[in-house]
Image (cartoon, rainbow, N blue to C red; front, top):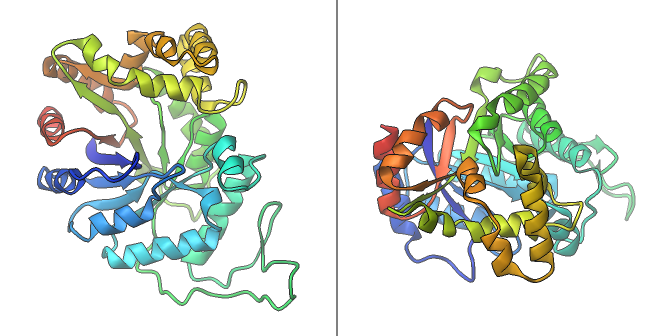
Length: 340
């Protein structure tokens, strides 16, 4: 298993320690560095700036939100990044959720799987330097209205190589689609104890691949895993509980929260219901306290270095190909040592 550096997206502004962190990751032999976006900092600008300071790290987005850019705009950015980085760019994309898609980007959310499938098809055509035309349910190129002067165009950029496309997915159907149409999969909350379920979903997708698709043996599974090192396990877990409570309880509406469903499938349905009830009632401190340690330990590495080293083989032997971690330079050094 390789290690990657997960930077996520900014809070109120950029972390001044990020350049040092990226330099440390490269010195330690990390495979890649990944940026994200939600409704603040974008994924591409920080990645380009940080990438200019590196020479070996692959540069990936985890993720670019589909609704933030048209498919051809995303393809343009991907090809530009790939040229500037000398072929180190990896494009991670995802549908996001209805709150962000409709509330921030003012785009429709229904049928995210079908929309994603069309989006990726246009990405492929654009980055293959085809003359782009598309007649889908969600995207039509050229635009059928307006002046009527639109015509199919071909990118002026000559692709440096075939850029890998990775899909963010959580549910089994989404995971299967990632295996069918993409070069890799981004889990968000992944438990190695559920490895068999995800392998089955991936095999379903691989079976639907076309003959010209890349070899499934080259398929990437790049998984963000939170690592909190502390002599006290509960103290370490407390640093993660607020984020888990937010995603389970507040990311999406009741009955329309995909992160909630992930943890419910792991066997925490009753706990998720309690966390969501408390969070939506404005009782956030109680929601955070309601996140059990067993749930934290399903998806994160927490506690003393020795405990994390004991748990490492389960993650190493899972279907993950690259574990994406964040934290301090010391955390990166410790994980590099544990991973060998």
